[in-house]
Length: 297
Ligand code: GDP
Figure 1: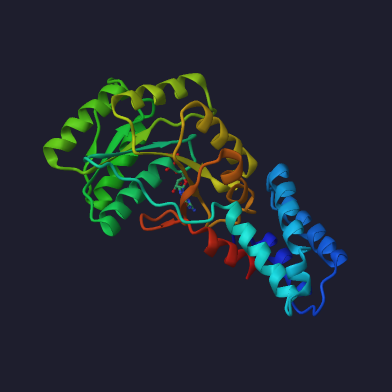
Figure 2: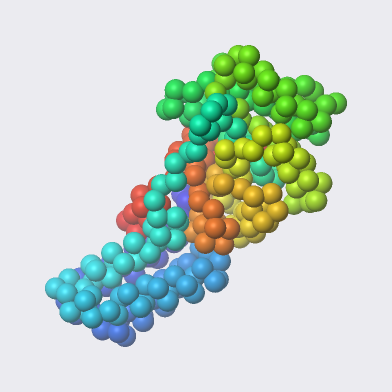
């Protein structure tokens, strides 16, 4: 299960402080040592850990907390608040174009779950938002990727726009926009090419696609199992192409939690959705507070 180690450690630590009728500065220090250790072990970015520990410590040794009737519980609440904050605070809603079609661009490295997530997102848009999405196959380097998207489209009974591998992604997107107007699709989801590494060609291609029509959302799909690599990828994509949010996949696996807890502060972009399985209905909006509650038990 995801976050298992982190949850176990933090819950143990919180249990120890919970019942205390009096919390001293030394207690807070001891607790924060354990929290720090738990976060590092969960592969959370070191700078993020430091800032988190500092913030919680400062708030927890405040006189209001120390003098309250339930200081242990107050401290736990502070940890929960700060954990929520670390993951973005509020849920971050989907942005739609004022004038359709809304354009959502899916970017990411190969294998992160981009094509699968494109399908899942189309499914969410249809079911929860009552939209009429068009999936666009813009990965011209891997014929298998186009086929995969077509298979997903069939499975969901949703249209997929593709032009094979001989037309440039820019042209594909241009024509997909025309097609969406004809067929009254109010959202287009562009599945762009993934690469094994972040490279200049990939970034340039993504920038070129952006020139056709400024996307309303650019979602970076990253695999939560890759921990700090996912965080670095998010930072790089944000700096070079610009992203509006992150989809963190494979949270149904036994990821330690580092990516989920670090991405927001390192890449400064919210996690919008999480992938919870391979099936087409396994995409959920990301709720920072619920996630914090889950971790703290
Ligand atoms: P792409 O190369 O980024 O387009 O990645 P794919 O969409 O082909 O996904 C790669 C693999 O990850 C596939 O086997 C997917 O079924 C799997 N996958 C994607 N998202 C999730 C998820 O949230 N949970 C699990 N368990 N598997 C996922």
